[in-house]
Amino acid sequence: MVMFFSPDCDHCKHQTEAILEQINKFKDVQIVMAAYQPFDEIKQFNTYFRIFDHPNIKIGRDEKFFLVPFYRIRNLPYLALYDKNGNLITTFEGNQKPETLLKAFQQKGKEQ
Image (tube, rainbow, N blue to C red; front, side, top):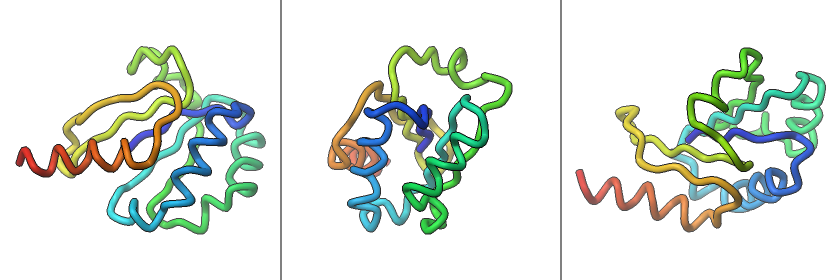
């Protein structure tokens, strides 16, 4: 799962909190969090939410501003869900309940 976020976005903070509250349900999901803001802001976000405590979450900076035009992002947080083969399952703009994300992964699993 790719999550494009902004460290100062309240919606992004709420989405991160919601996922972390149920992180045990995401243990088989590789999460890549990316933001365009300066690295210091991303680092503060990382420290505040203790992202580094979760080996299945990677966080970094989209320094070339590739993701926004690639996904045509209009609202944050932006979530792109992929299956284990790298195929796009679906995308979401704005906050989503963890159950909605997990259900999207489960639906893809049933189709295979």
